[in-house]
Length: 167
Image 1 (cartoon, rainbow, N blue to C red):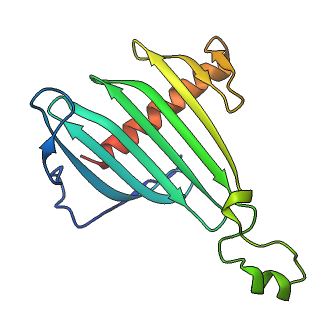
Image 2 (image 1 turned 90 degrees about the vertical axis):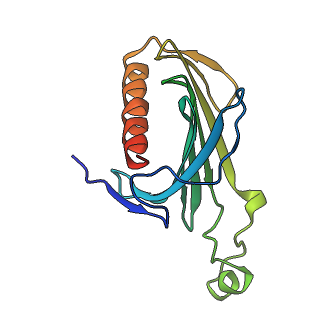
Image 3 (image 1 turned 45 degrees about the vertical axis):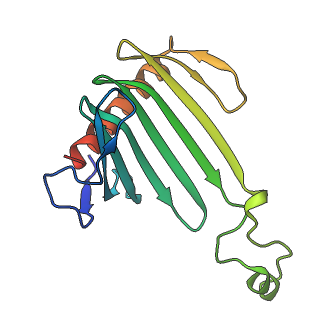
């Protein structure tokens, strides 16, 4: 079992702080909070939660490294996950690998964001359960396999851990 470490930003602990602004729903107000977070795999990133009067409405975990970026965004409907969008970008070379470094190392290619590969997967939930997902090729998949059940459990587990870190 992994260890989870949460490093709070300058926001007061135990209080969901941020600038209040009119929310998207009626007269609801919304607020946001950022915390540095290290997940079970040791990936350090920024966790951002957006709340309205009804509770969490969106939660995003972003990891930036020298070799890529990963963004997981959880969208809520009431108290249940309605959609999870996972975007992974793999850079063609590390960010520090500029033209000068590349040439000094006998490489004819250097970091170029345009040559990076990005994949997107959208998981859709219905009544609190994973119903389907759209893979990077645009194919709709339905959650009828054991691997889909494991993915649903993993997404819910990660969301619960992220939400707890934002309390």
